[in-house]
Image (tube, rainbow, N blue to C red; front, side):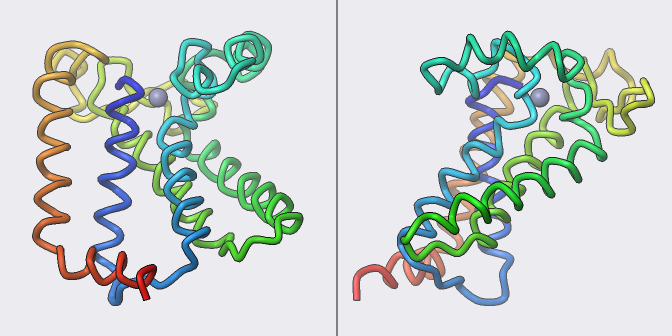
Length: 194
Ligand SMILES: [Zn+2]
C-alpha cells in the first residue's frame, strides 16, 4: 500500500477504536493533537525499512538517513512487518515516548499517544496483508502471509485497485462511521470549547 492509503487506514482504525470505546475519551488538547500526529506516524512506521517510504520524505535528512538505516533492517518488509517487530516497536516506542515527554512540560498523556501510535502501526500491517508482496508475520521465518492466501488474487501496491477501490471505500467508510457516531465526535470536540 502507498503512504496515503496507510495514513487513511491509520485514521480509520483510530476512528473505529474511538467509536467502540464505552465512553467518549477526555484528554488535554495537547494530548489529542500529539495523539493524532502519533497515529499518522504509526501508520507509516513499519515502512521504516523502505528508503522510498513517505515516512522518510517527511524529514529533511530523511532520504539520507534511510539509506543507512534500511539495509541494517534487512530490506523491505522484514522485521518491521512481523509480530516480533510489533512487540519491539511497541516496547521501544513506549520507552522513547516516556523519555521524551518527561522533558516536555505540556500536559500530555503518554499512554494515549502510545495507543494511537500502535493503532497506526497495526493498521499498517493489516493493510499490507491484501498486497501481492504479503507480510512476513513470523519473521525470521521466511513465509509470508496475505489475505486472500492465494497471491494471484491479491493486489499490487499503488495500482488501480488500491487507488480506485480501496482508498475511496476506506474514505467513505470513515466518513460514514464518524457521521453515524456524530454525537460522540461532537462530544469529544466540545470538551475543548468550554
Ligand atoms: Zn508496509
